[in-house]
Image 1 (tube, helix red, strand yellow):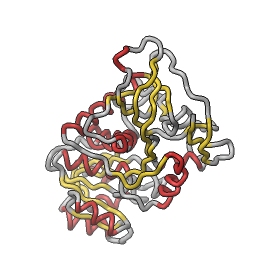
Image 2 (cartoon, rainbow, N blue to C red; image 1 turned 90 degrees about the vertical axis):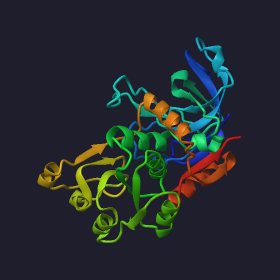
Image 3 (cartoon, rainbow, N blue to C red; image 1 turned 180 degrees about the vertical axis):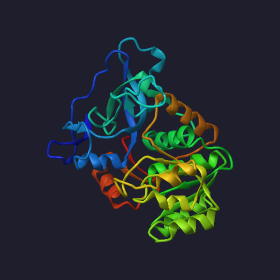
Image 4 (tube, one colour; image 1 turned 60 degrees about the vertical axis):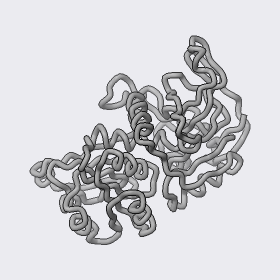
Amino acid sequence: MKAILLTEAMNIEITDVTKPTAGEGEVIVKIAASSLNHRELWIQKGLYPGMKVPCILGADGAGTIVELGNNVNPTWKDKEVIIYPAYDWGTNEHAPSRQFRVLGMPDPGTMAEYIAVPTTNLVEKPKYLKWQEAAAIPVAGLTAWRALNRHGRIQKGDKVLITGIGGGVAQAGLALALAFGATVYVTSSSAEKIEYAKSIGAIGGVNYKDEDWHSQLKELSGGIDIVLDSSPSPVLDNYFRFMNYGGRIVTYGSTGAPKTTISISKFFLRHIQFIGTAMGSPLEFMALLQFMEKHNIQPLIDSQFSFKDGEKAFDALRTGNQIGKIVINHI
């Protein structure tokens, strides 16, 4: 079968690999579409724990079950499914086990014609979603869902700031927050991305490259309850200018600065919470899809590429110009 492979030389190649076989409790899914995350770019640079090459890339994917392994209920055959993008979360809903790992490194990922996965990694695809939309959900949607729902404890009427609008998690967070009935503000260095976010429901936004963006946001919002943060500021004290007492800063990335400083007295006197998060559990993945179906949420697709042009999809992601997810069509 064909697969998008990260080679030992850390190059991306579309090449022939051995088709997987279904083990005990596993099925073979014929992938209809996959999508990219910035994680794949970090992996290609070797900046990821547990590197093992060569490896089939990709954590996001959706497709049809075409083969069943031993002890799999026959009703799974021919089901259209979305793949939960990780293994071994464990039994603790509060945090993953130390064995938790995401598809696509070191385990084979979704950017192939077929993948073998346990049935516990599968959720039926809601019928209202196209393949491309289904494939765009897993990593970004699950990360945003856990950040807002579990850690942010989002409620109707909350004021939510989403930083770095345009990326997959940020776009998913915008759609989810609006469905919860929150009032949403955004940041970006792109006026175009801010205007687009406003066109689909955000109240307003500020350019984070402006020195006084914190003050602008305070004036614009009157105070923020939850921050969904892809890139915390090197100086978190700046957030105190716009955070409401009892606010929650939930971060899932460190693209802006690997370290940050904070005034401890302001931090505890204002009852601010600074929470780290990544991905989510299988139960949260099911809850996310149920919520999306209830509210008819359709993931935003920036661009699509054929499987044979998969390398071009990576080039598109590197530009950082996307608004929404970049998808690879396998069929």
